[in-house]
Length: 176
Length: 311
Image (cartoon, rainbow over the protein chains, first blue to last red):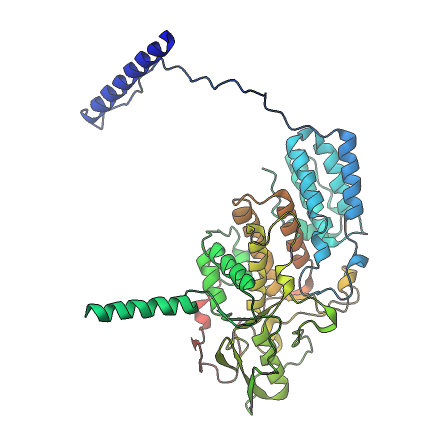
């Protein structure tokens, strides 16, 4: 109770000081006025203690993450998967059949940056994998290029097909 | 006097409710859900303020800027009527065919890939620029067709005069299961398709309707070899989609909290479109052609090309 009264007193004093400051700033020559915020001994309100401590999202273990990467590789569409009756006019549906898994991988890495080297290795293998769709390879390479640039790793263009590099360079990958 | 103004107000409301407030006119073959999604896509993109950071990208899309209102205006000069999958222009919607003698520049290459029928061979239709397809059919036979759609008689004297696009179930497929059809990611994807189809109203002569090219037998995407799935133009339909997605993914989708899976799907879709560009691709004149250019169509005077300034 006493503590609450003290806080009210301090808060009242603070408000008075602010009002005086505003009044003074309005009645001073603007060109020479320098507004100095009054230093107030206002206590920062302490948030109530949580009933249950917030749980940090579980970091996926390295081996679990690697298993996920292997599963994703298996899910990636190959040119032979494109059905002959597929409408070639638009991107075939197989193009995005692995997107849930790729999104999941991204989310894991965002939560645990220690997984970056592992995911870079995955993206590198994916970008070099001539068995999978060119669109997937290009997206993998775009991610790899992002991380290589971020980590100052030189990029060797000779290791990837010219067409895949050309596409990857345009893709606006976002990790932030 | 007051009664008169009330009547006028009621009439305005009635006209608005009957579809004048829509971006497109819809044929009865378009389902309510499809119409609702298309209108939502258009409204969402109109509200965006994308900024292009590269002059070459504006040269590709041939619009002064990539803001939502500019994209919508560009689209509405090309697409006006939407018909559904069951629409049959050769059936009850066929009105007349008129012989023409003053042929426009003739196609010398057979690089035309406009399915005039949908669902042929069990394929899933995404979207077809039916106005352009009917026009091209007319060019082959030296006739100008007239059809009806959305209670309107349309004389197809140019790929742009009808401005008719046909939507199929493929347009409303999910890219990723976790993302609903009315998500921002799906709006972005569908809008890129509207831009693609609208580009088919442009071009003349050999570049008429910016038709797709047959992928060569040595094409690196083996699944596309000998298919009309390639892009022969640096300012063609797929190129336009690539530029749109290049800015929409970071400036629209990311701002609207797209999930990582949605962003991946859009990136892969963009990569697919870009992968179709041939090394021999060129910039072509987008000026549209037609029989009797300048004629007044159902929707008014055809937009003049001078409205497009390529920087």
